[in-house]
Length: 640
Image (cartoon, rainbow, N blue to C red):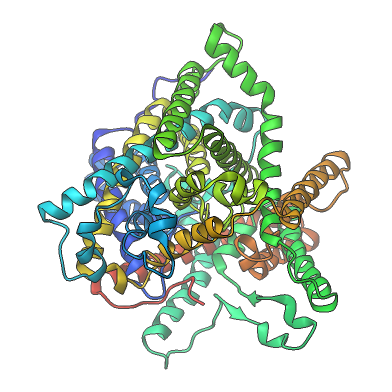
């Protein structure tokens, strides 16, 4: 039984005030770096958010000054962690990975309909206007040199902002309910590792030697020096630097059959190498190996045998669904016990240390289902369409959360594999229907990338709270509050910025996402067909390969290939596939240390690799802030 006398002390009034201010500031930061920076500075594109770590670094540094000048006013480690978690919550909503897509979607279809695309006949009849921006207020939004702060503009956006804020609040809350139901199984029974939380915990833990460790600062210096020189070189090309971020080698493969390799690049991101050091060797090896096997398959099947399409993306979709199904199967006893306790009560499962009581979590999840069903059917979906959406969305959410909690990959991008795509692939656009596909397309913003997914970030927040003894139940309220404030702040910053600069002039993707979303929907409606055998077969093969790999991994201790390595690179691009060589370098360094120097040397090297991550994040964050303050383009880590 935990001693709860001091739990919750991190949730203080001043922590909430500071956290709220930083939530709004980060919403603005994420907006500007997504839409006004060229190339884009994608701060939430990886598992550990750049903006959140940099914000925590600034808070911790300022707190050190306060601790010297006025020790009684210094923030505690718990308070700093609460602030960090609040900033992470806005990262699951703001910027390129979510809000860009949402704002771009609700402003697009009425503006860009024309005779050629026939959206007025094909799409408009199925669009619920109460979800969308008023077409009469979009001139200034697209052209710029205007302002959000007129009665007409504010009223024209009031409906979509209110509707989608409630929608986000409900779905994000449902995921908190699910996390409350499964946390004990994954954290206490299976004791999953949660590798992503190591750096923020080390940064705030009181009495930690992290900031005094010379090995850590050596790693910080290596990564920081590379990023510092890269940034200076960007401003002044005469300053030498080493290019670590992206080097395409497609020009090595220009002749048949090698030209079928379709995109391959080298990179040596220090933070990816550092994060990979904490990933199990079998996963990191499997990731780069399956990536290369996928490229070899392209060369053989397309370059030599003349295949026109292999449906790698659909195969990846089937693989991710398999991860979700297997995770759900392993949770079946826990979920049954939770529901039984919620209905009958009794002491069979102790839920006193959970973020919510099992009864509250069950009722919250059920209420969320009812609301989303009502909401989606009011928007025009059929009941079976809503069920299909929820099944695919929650399976993918469970899969991403499981992968993050167990293995902590540096990135888990799942591009274009949203419930609409999976339903269209599985049943055919004709059978899904234009009304269902239209509303599902309006939900596309949630799942286009999956890199800033709320469920793993919420679960990791509960794990961090457990480590520093913050009450999870108080933290739930903080997380919900930060999510709602972050959503409203992100809407505000996007509209504030775009009315001033013009969405059509944006360097980001806020207009492009509309073309992508409704162009895809147009193709589905115009070319409505039943399920294609090749597509369905690819979904099934991805599911089957993943299930077989799980079976082999569970049956044979010696089996070297991890199924998640396949899942992460099944599409042969996106996610770990784009950073495969950095993952390879992290794997090679780690296995060399273990084989040549042993476990003690590996343990001694941990601070160095944390330093690689820390240095990359701090210097990259600093360049981004410099660009934000002085309105100048600066080096962007993810730029090709």
